[in-house]
Image (tube, rainbow, N blue to C red):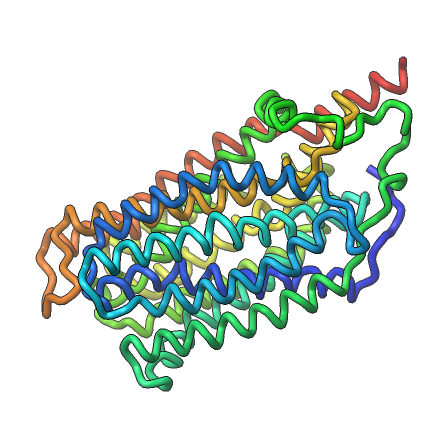
Amino acid sequence: MSKKKYLKWYNKVAYGSGDFAAICSFGLMTSFIMIYCTDVMGMNSGIIGTLMLASKLLDGITDVICGRLIDRTKSRLGKARPWMLFSQIGVSGSLFLLFSIPQAAPNVQYVYFFIVYTALNALFYTANNIAYSTLTALITRNGEERVQLGSIRFIFSLISNLIITTFAMNIVTAFGGGAVGWKRTALLFGTIALIVNTFSCLMVKELPDDEFDENPQKVTSQNNISFFQSVKYLLTNRYYIIILFMYLTDYITTGIMYGVAIYYMTYVLGNASLLGSFTLMRTIPMVIGLSFTPLLIKKAGSMYKLNLIEYSLAFASRVLFVIAAFTLNVPFMLLTYGLYNLFGSSVKGSMNALIAETSDYTWRKHHVRIDGTMFSCSSVGIKLGSGLGSAILGWLLSFGGYVGSAATQTAGAISMIKILYVLVPTILALVMIGLLSLLKVEKANQTLDSERDKG
């Protein structure tokens, strides 16, 4: 990977702020849409979970199509920036509508929810997120800068998540509480997201095509590649498949943990305000870890080595968290949760750089650049994973007997909340270690470079 520097410090910070905008929309929805639907609107969690999953199945189609459209786009703003800039209008508008479910017959509410939820996820957020992620490969060719971008953007993601989980409920109350409070809160966060997204998009610039093409005569034009050829390149790239499953695993975990967290704090620990403390113990350790991730990767010599070691330590911390949770030792829970996030930070910070490496692998193998299509794995994984997580959450809460309107919950509902918050994410952490052990894309690229130099 080229060592040439492409970005100033302010370009990196501006790019990273785009995740602040994304989480203001996506994070509010992920963390609170279930409890809004069940406890405010009186809707059934199992039906909501099923509708979420049905909507997410459409995302797998629109994600790849959107990536393909980005690859074929030519404009003064480049390939990805136009999509990132204008799609946020739809994201912010849909967020407001999603938290504005009308007081109507149940069937009308479920249809309304499905339409708006699908528009937000399968259309507008798809275009925004894939375009934003693709910029990692389009604004720099420097591997270290790509890792830095991934770390900085995730720091912004953590900050916005902290703000949302800490203050959202208070803001809802300040805005009048109930349905009106949620509607106004969604409008506030949607407006902030629109402003920050615009700033992030306009503060970076895509590189010209000839910056990437070291052998232009061998490079196949994206316009000469059919949609099915693009899909074939994806499905025959083993590292794309591995990263896709990593995103699915990570965001199934996120969809379950974020969605059930407020239930766990309320019904198990008996203090809903503890959600802010746990969010803080996710944010601070991960920000510290992300700050050191570029340096640690440089010293380790590869993302593969560092990620595998650190995530193994994260899993060990997660096992300790289970012990703390079963003894209801809140201080020890906070400590082990902090360690879990500290050691899991390198994977978060390097994911976009790994996708860029995976896209470079396709270029080395086939002399084809499909960066937008390749980065669809992040959007597919995020949305399908979080959708599956939310669906699993809704189904199992309903199976456990949870009733949002009930003054007290049954023992079965409480047990299910414990399983979802404590045990399921621990099992998925072990799955993540297995996937990381297979992700040797850096070595594969080095091998291809050596073979090219010898040839």
